[in-house]
Image 1 (cartoon, rainbow, N blue to C red):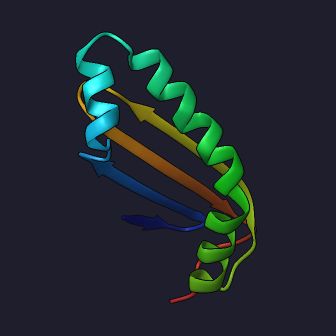
Image 2 (tube, rainbow, N blue to C red):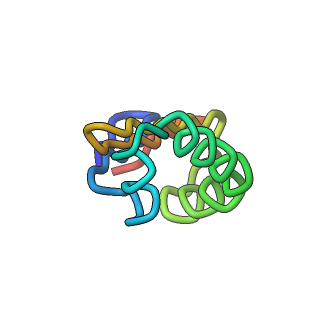
Length: 85
């Protein structure tokens, strides 16, 4: 996790489930990435709520992206002001 001013960045690897990895291995990465985008759109309020609770700041912007091969992901939160401390 990277905290810098008004930005929180979470970088991850090895995030795919076994089922998703099987799909990717068999040429269906676009399907997996579309499913991930749909999931993140549903989870957006919960992710933002968690970051707001931990940081004490309001999330202005949330961006999420996944890469299938290699298996990497990033969650980026832009806050309404700099983190304190």
